[in-house]
Image (cartoon, rainbow over all chains, first blue to last red; front, side, top):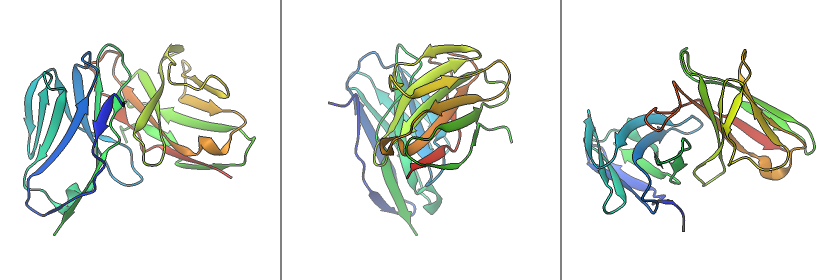
Amino acid sequence: QKEVEQDPGPLSVPEGAIVSLNCTYSNSAFQYFMWYRQYSRKGPELLMYTYSSGNKEDGRFTAQVDKSSKYISLFIRDSQPSDSATYLCAMTGDTDKLIFGTGTRLQVFP
Amino acid sequence: NAGVMQNPRHLVRRRGQEARLRCSPMKGHSHVYWYRQLPEEGLKFMVYLQKENIIDESGMPKERFSAEFPKEGPSILRIQQVVRGDSAAYFCASSTSGGRNQPQHFGDGTRLSIL
């Protein structure tokens, strides 16, 4: 079993939809949770960074962490075609190395 | 450009040759991390370095791979005697200091192709 599980998609939604992206994990030591966005042939770009359980909002993006269920989510409101990319969850606990999910491909069509 | 700089962006090598990948961290960052991304897989940690020190190399293959971050100049990931299975995208990230509360920022990677 992988430490971090993420549905690879692709997820295809119309412009303006609310998008929900999720990851589950097995290591209860994870405390720091990140979401990165990666466009084709580019590097991961940090979108959201949260510590422990709770919600964090930044513009159209909301990150949620539920440590009791070992489940994290990223919500994108009013999705735009420019949001079309691969979204990677990442997490770490007692080391400095990030453990990544495999990424979910999102396509937002006009 | 204040971002993490990686070069070359694309590198082609024949089996048995050496590959050298360079990474200059963001201004003010003194911690560097290398990750490898294989097709259809997530990024996998390879090594974590500070200036002149390897902090964690638990993700590095035991043979042919080495990394350094000298006092002056970029961090180098070196792959000797490359094989087809080394073909991947190699990403470098940097942070201001170590610790889990410091976010890592990534460069655009070097895409290594082995003929």
